[in-house]
Picture 1 (cartoon, rainbow, N blue to C red):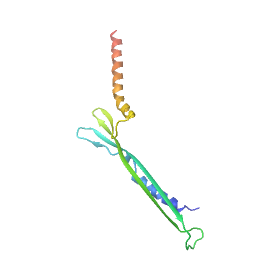
Picture 2 (cartoon, rainbow, N blue to C red):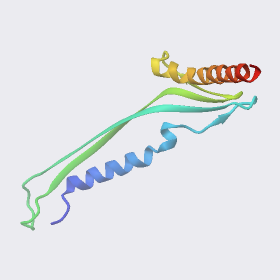
Picture 3 (tube, rainbow, N blue to C red):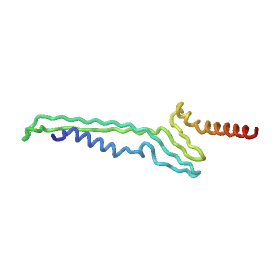
Picture 4 (cartoon, rainbow, N blue to C red):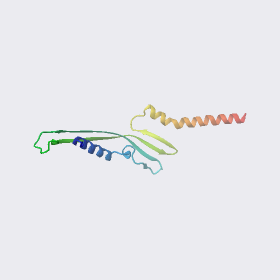
Length: 130
């Protein structure tokens, strides 16, 4: 059985969307600042598509296949959501919107790791001095 014309429309639309959107669309190209920091943009991509068609009775010589009319369309939205900043011995996620709880926790992880290391280092020194 041959492919229905609507399938061809949908396939073409999806291939076009796939060409427009890749990993560099979501996580952009890194930009290096003069002081050595690297800034990586992070975006949210939303897309949708629709395809439709119909067969109509016309003056067709073939009895198997009726004349077909159809169309398809797509829409893509790209919204920047954050920047990853790497440099000065730290990595930070700078959200464009206000910090959420999870982002705040992620930002505090290096602080708590340093505190934990300092506490364990002090305990080792106390044990060794006794």
